Image (cartoon, rainbow, N blue to C red; front, side, top):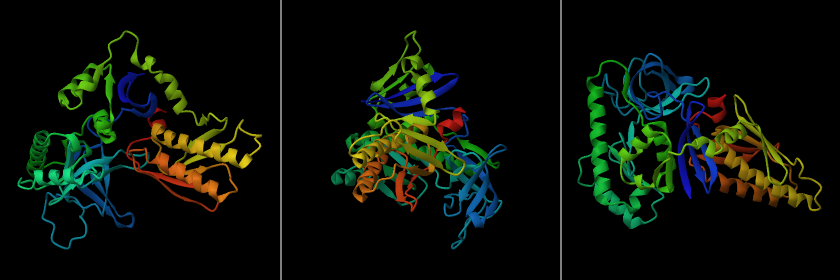
Length: 388
């Protein structure tokens, strides 16, 4: 069973996701109410820096975002882009959407392809594109979904999400029409608003994260926060029957043991059942993880035992990357093994565990120094950066 819990502890709101009664993801929700992923802005191009292939976009008085130059905006508001123009120019007024939170010294990343999403459909400003989630394996159903919008006048790109596979067509079409009207309103407001600034706020962080995780994967949502409960009830009936309001006198965060969980997630040392342990060190440039045998030594078949410890460490590393939201470049120093077959077995285990992460995470290679390279896409701030 998979359940999501939204609660508060020490004046911070948390979204916790439990898979098989074990904490799999921990998200502190302390971002700005308006400046968050999904917020749509009218921005002005302040500077184009070609050597880093990015443009810096003034979003409002307090925020600047960066836009990769290969991500041309779907809408330039102050002029019509002539054919063949390869980039935007300074002082252009453009429509952008926050795609990634600020990371330490980096500004927030924005995209020019503004999009909206619902339970069944994602819609963006790319024209003449209708797609279906790769997770829908029934090709007949995929074709049916595409035909649903064949005769509709929708000048936006549409992607049918995994939840469409078993959904009623009427519910899907209602959402398509609703998203179209919202997109039309955003464009209309953008055309007549002179100043730069916020045009449309993104969804509350907990909703955005649950949507990214996948509502269909969640069996139960529990919260002890009345406002959150009311918001979830109002969203729709698609999953509200799995919604539980916790109203016991004993605090929910204590029932969950949240204080102890957070203490462990901020500790750089993580013990393994075998007696080995991990040392996790986030640095400015990358995350470094060292695997140690610890108390797990002195076995007869040392090579086999080292493989067992390394594979246990690989499973725990994939788990800790999700829990701590560590991203970017990650280097892992596993215990050295002599047999090539054991190294290949470890790589298979690592790849299999990384696939469980909804955030794009890949094993890249093994360096000449026998360091295992992993990359994980940066979307939100890591846990330690928020809490410390």
